[in-house]
Image (tube, rainbow, N blue to C red; front, side, top):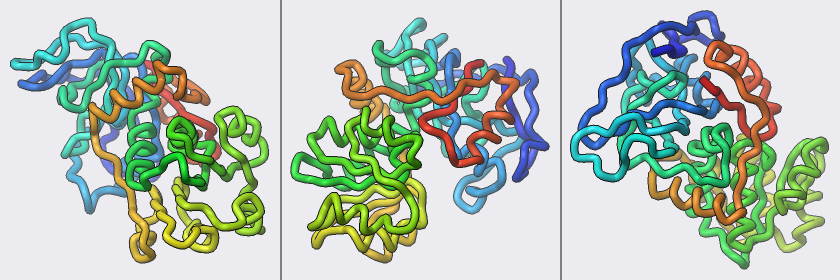
Amino acid sequence: MQAATYSGYSADNSRLTVGEVPDPKVGPGQVLIEVRAAGVNPVDWKVMAGGLDAMMDTVFPTIPGWDVAGVVRAAGPDTPEFTAGDEVMAYARKDVVQAGTFAQLVTVSARDVARKPAALDWPQAGGLPLAGLTALRSLDALRVGTRDTLLIHAAAGGVGSIAVQIARARGARVIGTASERNHDFLQALGAEPIAYGDGLTERVRALAPDGVTTVLDCIGGQLETTLAVLAPGGRHVSIADPAVTQHGGRWIWVRPDGAGLAELAYLANRGLLTVEVAQTFGLTDVAAAFDVSRTGRVRGKLVIVP
């Protein structure tokens, strides 16, 4: 099969190539997925730069990518959940960084796989797993419900935009920070947009004079503002800043979760959740996708379509 690979850690794309690699094997409890779309996430190029070396083992050459949507080509022994031809999606992170999703084929544990929602096309489904499960885990940790006012830092990004929709589906009021060019986008999702930068605390307090009950930080560096606008007894989490744990918050690290993906698929099929796809790239353009992701200015998701 064809796959993008890198031969060693690099902070740029100099070791990233595309070529022929062996097809993956399919063991018990696994499914072999023919990749139709694979979301690009900042963690992909951060892993390539060695950012998780202290936490996870890596085997080179490495295929990047942890998101996938595609068609089951084969199921391993004792895997009754899926059969060839099923349309599925998965957050395919494994214990060892090696066999990722920026390829024509990938093997994934059946417990991490869910059926693709009919309401989403392939790029949307391919961009959903990591961002969607991160948003879901964050909101579950915050116990967001109908009585909450939720502030989301970086609400127009991949995780933030999905979190807006899940929170609105749960009946919460949502305030979201974003650049002004993304304010109409956030309003369409049901959030009240506010600008980044100086005066953010005052702008949040103008909308929520008693403070917000919950905060989701999707960008990092927002702890001071978070603590300044959080109501007494409020809850806060961050997906980007472990320092929140020193101030009563929780640092969220998403897990593969087939049941959680099924929950997201249910919301999508009810018309309560969609995925904004900013741009798609071919398998030979993974480097270009990484360059765009590194800008930090992407609204929604970047997706590889092999």
